[in-house]
Amino acid sequence: MTQGPGTVPPLVGADPWARRRRALIPILIALTSVLGSVAAWRASAASGAAGGAEGRAFADTLAAEQQTARIETELASTEFTYARRRALEAAANALRQADAADAAGAAQLDALAGAYEVAAASLLGFISTDAIDAEGGLDLEAMEQAEWSLVEDLQDLDPAEELAEGESLRTKSQRLVGLTALLIAAALFLTLAEVSRRPRVAILYWRGGLLVLATSVVLLIVVEAR
Image (cartoon, rainbow, N blue to C red):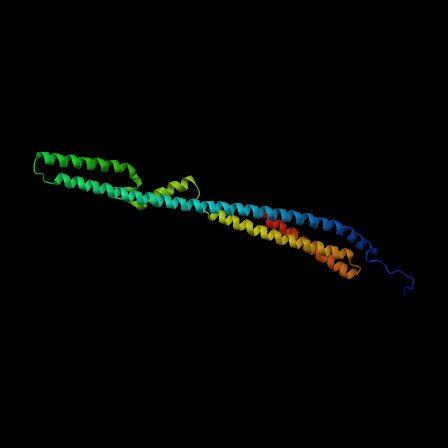
């Protein structure tokens, strides 16, 4: 039937489905706003946690550098002390084997040798037992391993775990920011579906908004589950 000049064309929302769709659109837009706020909050929290993990990794690295410097200093000090002790022992042995002109000279050499031996013995207390091998020689590698084993028992100096955690959280934050953009796009599509006066265009925007919203919800669950 042909409409007359005074006939008003039916509105886009005249059919029941269109009316239901228009009633749902504000609810879905509100949902996208809530989800967008949640995604932004979680992104901020993940970014903060990533910064904390990276800070701990930096602290571990700094502590490891400090321990390395300390151990190297102790190794150098032990090497010097051991060399000094061996020199005193060698000097004492040389004095005891030296020929004296008389008994008084022999007594002086013996007393000096005894003093060197006492000094050498006193230095032994400054040398870690981990640095002395079974034959009494110097083993700095064994001492270094023992020092690092003790340090690692007391604190974790490996930043690898914290760095991996920080990278994972940073990636999560970036993905949540991307999801926020998707939710904004979903809200835009739904808004265009609401204001459009052309039925086909409105339906396209409606379907696009639903698709983007559903995808965003699924991705948000997946990202948060990791």
